Image (cartoon, rainbow, N blue to C red; front, side, top):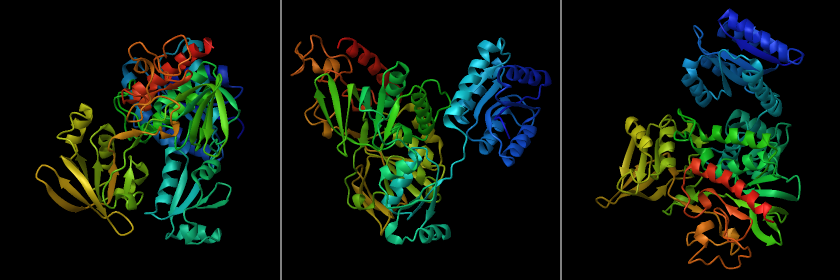
Length: 552
């Protein structure tokens, strides 16, 4: 098939000829320039390319076309060539539609017509799209296959890990024909479940998350022993720091123990993040941030847990769970928070078997026709309720407080009120979970009248507050009584700097009680628990790291 294709589709012949002409002038020696006069014609072209083993690098579609507009076309085209980069051609009046396409259909860019001069308004955009396509490639990799039990916590943990890291996989129940065939082919019995079959056919019996990460091609080994900046935790703050650290030339490493994106990456919809008026899923936001950090050569280390941190002269050294050590000039702690365990009879035994912490979006389709209960009253609980209401027969939000107003954003409260199969119950707590092998019922205590009632429950999702994972730090840095890391002004009391401080200056705003160790995002004491503020703190931390390094 030769060169990969750049496809344009526009029903206006003059516009179609003009963009094809400009594209051939710049890219004709490296790419096939194909133009179509309608969305249906373009889809036929794409199907033919697919059958013949062709590749498509970029697709440009006009927004205003009869029968099928550009957004609808790109949505269908994604099924044929999911790795192709996508852009929408729009008039100025259609910019709202273009923004919607970016947020909802994951279009990469939009171009205003006319685009003269192309050297300024067309080619830089196409260059960026081609760079992104070349970086990710378009080779269709065979999916990883997972064989497990529906109500097995280890099976769920592997599925959740793959989903949160955006790794394609296919799941088969051990009692399904294909699941049985895979077990037989691997000469494995029930004791081998969960079984993971890699793309090259290797069978992994009850693998660790790190083994699954390696099989999926995720990086688990650092490329060097010393960095300018090591970031611990890959949530919004860590990703923000990775993008800015890499873009500003710092040798940057991000270490994540579970999945890049953190709790924000699990959100089904974030609607109050600047620049996304129609909202964006946590997974989409995470993937875009990860691609940005890769673009700027920031390394990501997956499935590696940090268990120690110490100051070695001017270096800051991290110890990983396997004993390996890596050092840097500066460290940013952005480990976020974890959901607090729900203490109630039966909860621990059924965790992963109907009881889940966080949204567990992989369970959405399985909730069809069941009664789902969600414990919590903050934004994450509200977003989960909206997500699971698409599948479940009924979703009940159990809130310990008197109302949602003090803990949830107004826009979410309004949305919840409009969904018929969502009920909000205040001053209620779960005091028990029951089931044989998986969750079947829960007992609820209503503090308004003191009554207790056991109800059928297929799934229970828990979002009750959060606590920092900072015990591993010990006395290395100062923390408050809840374990959050103190930084900047919080460390200076009555004009006195923190004990052991060896600099002739006060700690920088995000700097901890040890010079060169910074904290950002939810793990920082007195931080604002929002995605936007976490990203901002991650970017700010890099600026402060530069100031720290300049003074060394």
